[in-house]
Length: 128
Image 1 (spheres, one colour):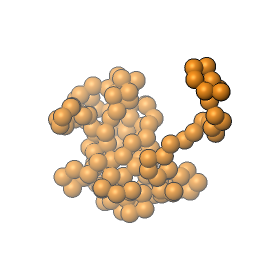
Image 2 (cartoon, rainbow, N blue to C red; image 1 turned 180 degrees about the vertical axis):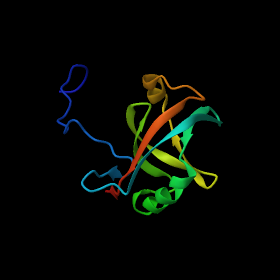
Image 3 (spheres, helix red, strand yellow; image 1 turned 120 degrees about the horizontal axis):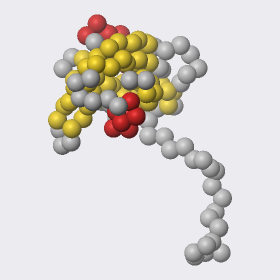
């Protein structure tokens, strides 16, 4: 039967769409650390909000990126910012890394530009 009200063909559901490597939690993290940082803004076509990874942690992130990065210099991470857990990727910038703060994370955590927030970052080995 086709048309309005027709039963759709059987599809495995829920279907997971993968647009990159899946972070594994089978083993220990490649690096795992916490810090307090200031929310900064970087203006592009739209404003974006970030927290800079402290300079003393950049070396270990760069080392972990060898096994975690899926290219373009970005490093997928699990993060907690202002008490809100999420996944994202660290962006390389000026010999360091920036943790992007998604709008939904900022809203849920009541995080504003200039706030000093607690951040936890976990980098895990990628798997395909």
